[in-house]
Image 1: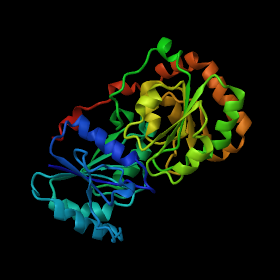
Image 2: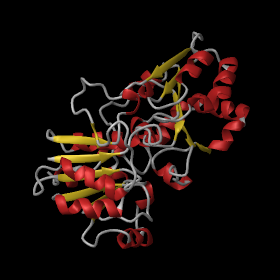
Image 3: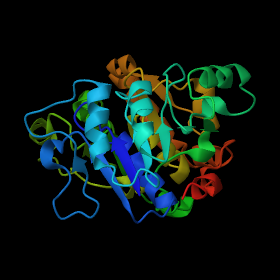
Length: 340
């Protein structure tokens, strides 16, 4: 039995649950449950298979790691054979050490170096770990259980790889520009850019993907709902079919960074928060050459010109992405498979 403890909701978006769903597919799990705090916005339908379990009753909320752990262990029926996978920024050493007494093994998925853990297996697929990074790995070992195994680098990246990459001839006929700001981000941060693009180039259609936990779907409809060249996508379980049919993707630098790299979609990445902390070298190792800070979006005209330049030089950029140091198609699954 595998139990996943995952963060999802208005503050956490969809990144964590995307990762664990990917891991479940890699491991070909049949007997597993995903545990979340609450089904915010009723995003998970009652008819879905493997519908997440709500850990907290309607009127109760998270208070501490220890209290969360005590609630969670009530779901563990078989201590000897249950593997717990945690992907949640709120939870760490205290939670893992307590839960470890009631399960076979703990696997932690994380993005930070300085966070303390008590896991048997630690997964962090940042490109920061490419090559010899002795100082970083030494720090990781200091903050983790002594016997912990480390799976580091993009070969362990967790994302949906079910879509096939398009050849450029087919992609060159596509005339879609897609905007996305994560599962809970305000997509109207791109409002001025979208309006300016409509004026500059009416040849292209624009997709606006509104995350299921985004606060302003009605405002997006009000701003762009009547425009014939704009499609608004909302509460879609899998957005990669939209991404795959895009000439360029403009998005926050979250999980989709790896997905668009895998699909070889030219992408303009925006660092929206401190968690999206990859540097220029790391982005380029994934095949991404265009990334801005959130404040750069204020330069509307320059951002629009950059988007149009990326479209104009689409083939050259796609070729560059194909020559990136990391071929995400060859993700190493052998170690994951041994966990069953």
